[in-house]
Length: 302
Image (cartoon, rainbow, N blue to C red; front, side, top):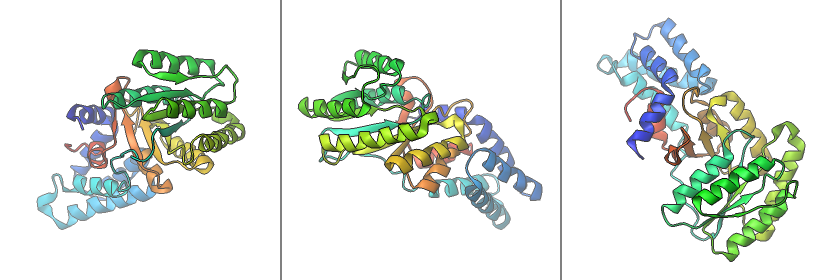
């Protein structure tokens, strides 16, 4: 992964990272231990991860005076990384063509832009992509996706405003099969304030897509806004219960993000992080690297 990307992530998480680094560089008395624990909790890592990371840092400080400069931070980073072991580099299933990817998430999380970034990424390896505009509730969503499709030179399947999202998804998958696409990316609605209706709609999309292509959708990835903190865990629980998520994409890990919520989601739901995003550029979406992430949030060199 590009060094520049992780430098930008580290800068984006600088509030959390600098505060962590400053505390871990100080003598670990009871006051600094409590402050460190509060920082982890405030950073949305969750109470269990906070306690374990602080205990690991404290143990190094107490047991090895030669390691006091970087050892506590290294130990805390190792704890964070240990809870992300399921987040291995993602590779598409060779047997599935097209691979059907369903993107989920609340409005504003960045689903449509993320869909475009995934297309741009896969186009570089000469993969043929097709977009399905399944958010028929908001006309602006379809227009935005169509703009991206035109800009990227990829095909898009759309329905009229208010059309059945499942029907659009069905047509998208059938079109992907007919046109020998490598990926079909379904951009779905995310109006969680009408939760019951939305979740029923998403379950229907899953059922209908499976009829269009048995075994599809092969991936169901939730796009979450990294600046929302603990709220993103609650969102993940709702979507996971509804459709059974297979992965996470965490966006907007720049500026206001605290950075720890993805650890809490992985730990509680057992859903791996596949990609993370830090900005608007195409290259600002990159595969997740658990070690680089753990070191970045603690202000360590990657």
